[in-house]
Length: 204
Image (cartoon, rainbow, N blue to C red; front, side, top):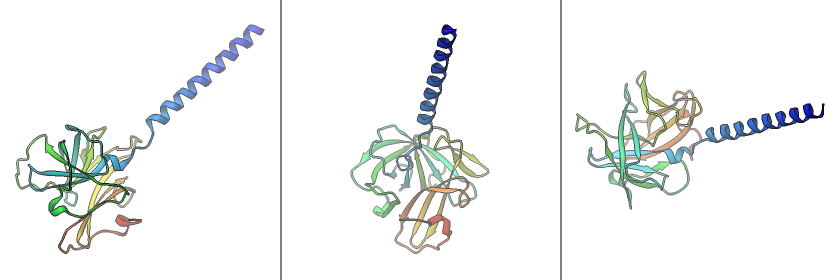
């Protein structure tokens, strides 16, 4: 009888250990990412001069970056690039003001496309996703990817407000889901505002 109790006790202890270990692994794998270290604004002066503005200070040469462009077009497009080097100052056109809605310093990197575009006049202007865990797919004309590894898809959008563009990332479809990232890009000319209330809700 005593041996049976001892065996049952060991069995219970083993089960509890397995459950605790499983929970720890699950918690580690589901830890939310810092979206501000994974995204940034991308601007260019042509294919040979592409700029990334981000809060991430630790990017090294050849780090992959996916660029989502044509955000306001019928069909979005994804480009593949790599980090060339970190820059000492803004590389945005005309040192454009703005940035994401998170406090902290902005960092700037030059990017290089993995493959040159057939259309040399294609505007490379949009959202950069740094080292995405999965390939960004274009489905039903919209770029999507699970950035948070939570089984939910993220989407990308842009809209205009007074003298500027607003780039956003959403969990769930834009304007229907939850906005998780917002970046403002100032331009020195008037733009016709087409942002919706939800685009800019809670902007700092």
